[in-house]
Length: 251
Image 1 (tube, rainbow, N blue to C red):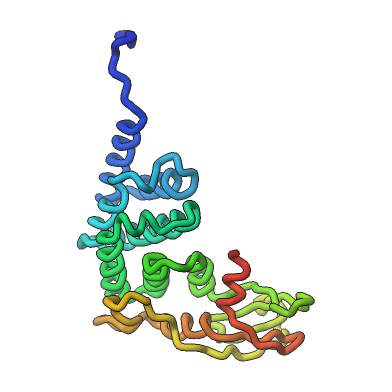
Image 2 (cartoon, helix red, strand yellow):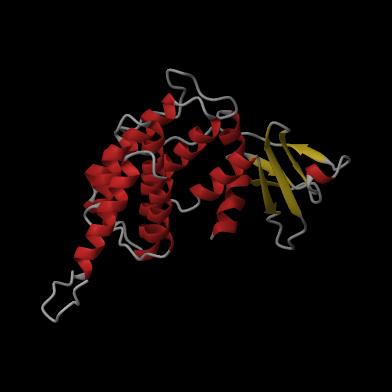
C-alpha cells in the first residue's frame, strides 16, 4: 500500500459531506436499508454532523416521498417534517422552509396522499404528524402523536398549585382521564373526555383530514378528536385542554 504524500488529494469537508449524504440517501432510497435511515436521523437530526441545509437533503427526501414505495415515502416524510421543525427552532427563522418552498409543498401533498392510502393506524398517525410538521408553526406534533399512538398521556393538572398528575387514556380501553395509572389500578376513578373536532391543515391547497379511498384506519378519527379535546382532573374537577398541556410539557 503506497503512503499518502503531501500532494495526495484530500477531499474538502463539503465534498466529504456531499459524498456521505449521497451514499446515505441513495441507500435509503432503495427501501431495503434501515441502517441508512438510522444514520440519516443520527447525523442530520440528532447530532448535526451533516447539515440539513445541504442542497442534497430536502430534494432527495422529496423525490423519495413521491415514489411508489410506501415505506420509503413514509420514512422520507417523517424525517423531512422533523428536520424542518428542528430548523425552525434552532435558527428561529423559517428561512429553510422559504428556500425550499417548492419541496415543502410537494412533501405536504405526498404526505396527504400517503395518509389517505394507508389502512395502518400507526402509519396514519405518523403521517398526520408529518402533515403538522410540514405545515409548520408548531413544535409539539411529535409529543401529540406519541400519545395517540401509545394511547395515553401522563400530564399535570394546570391548576396553579399543581394538584395532581392526570393520566389521559385514548384508545382501545376507552377515552377518559384518571388520577392513577389505570393499568395498575382496577378501582381508579375515571372521567370521560370531551372530544373536539380534529385539526385541519392550514394551507388552502391541502385536503381536509378525511378518509381516503381505503377509509380512515380504525381509531384514527376518534383519537385526534379526543387529543384536541378536554380532560377533567379527578382531584379538583377542572377541565383543561389536553393538547394545551402537551404543549406546556414540551415547551
